[in-house]
Length: 128
Image (cartoon, rainbow, N blue to C red):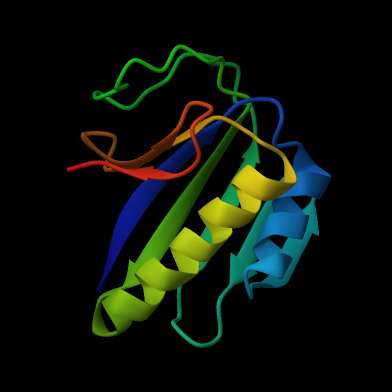
């Protein structure tokens, strides 16, 4: 069983930047076609799939925490419960790579309800 975390980012995180951040944080790209990317982190079992904008530019997370950026990319990270702490480390490594490589604004939320991480220009911030 796993937990799904939703990732919403602005247009600074284009497809090549997404792939670079995934690879730099230890993910293996398992599929890449027509703007859709699937990846896997071997150590933790964390999986991710995402694609460009689905036609909706608004932030879907219920706790936007003051963010107002237009969403251009959405991904889902599925955490492996048995390796939860390792999954979180892999996710945080990815988020830091996104910040340093692209500077993209983003929100990570649990089921679009509770915001867990955000970057609105101040680097990765963990939300309580």
